[in-house]
Image 1: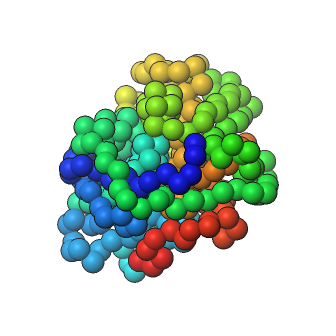
Image 2: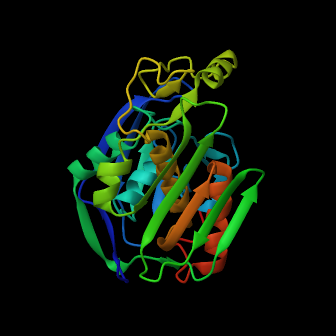
Image 3: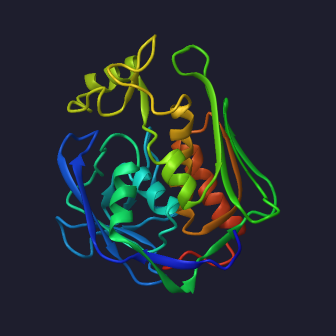
Amino acid sequence: MSFPRFQSTLARPVAVSGFGYWCGRDVRVEFRPAAADAGIRFVRDDLDRSAYVLALAKYRLDVSRRTNLHCRGIEFDMVEHILAALAGLRIDNCEVGVNGVEMPGCDGSAIAFVRALDSAGIVQQDSPAPRLNITEPVILSRGASRIEAHPDPEGRYSVEFHLDYPNDPAVGRQSASLEVNPESFRAEIAPCRTFVLQREADAIRRQGLGQRVTPRDLLVFDDVGPVDNVLRFENECARHKVLDVIGDMALTGCEIAGRIVAHRSGHQLNGALARELVARFATVAPLPATA
């Protein structure tokens, strides 16, 4: 797409309710309009107006299997699907109020958030969106996992993911890629659900976590395929990984121009790339700069 793109926010507030996958508690999240240059701000509605954290890479808390934000003792858990929905729809400024620590898991995808945001309406603002133009390759790796950022000569933003579960043929090897824009995100990525292997789900439950989650709430794979569920796309797992990358790259606070290519990457490596991209390529610093 061409630059500059003007920022956008919501026309009115809208809410989504559900329960947290990890904690099992009922939770309500409300998306509210925000001023130009405000960015994405998560606010604890059950505390007070000062209990907030900006959705920026420097506030990412390094945990496994999800993306959390933390600053000044305030934490928000599993924010990646909300961030993906906002970034996928190109909503730059939004206050995300939540009455607990964890975001609602819904069906493990971003579709509930996308539908709510679309129903609220999206309005253009007067300020140009902060730009992050990838001008040279960046490659980060940990073991067999790798994530790369490359320039795109036409200034487009695309994400490609290569998934490989060699010992679990029900998931197996699959790939997904797309140019990120609101139309492609709504149709091709937003409905794609998070997934977990049956043995991983059992281990999580033995830790006392995820007690309320059933195989109907996300994709649980045994040796044959999804348990008590059906795939929405043949490569739904790889598509969900694209969703995760979009959510994690949203922590740059910028409109990205470039190609992201990931091989077996997870949230931690994605977050490391987001920080590196901001350090190298952000030509307009994400605003505001501090929490």
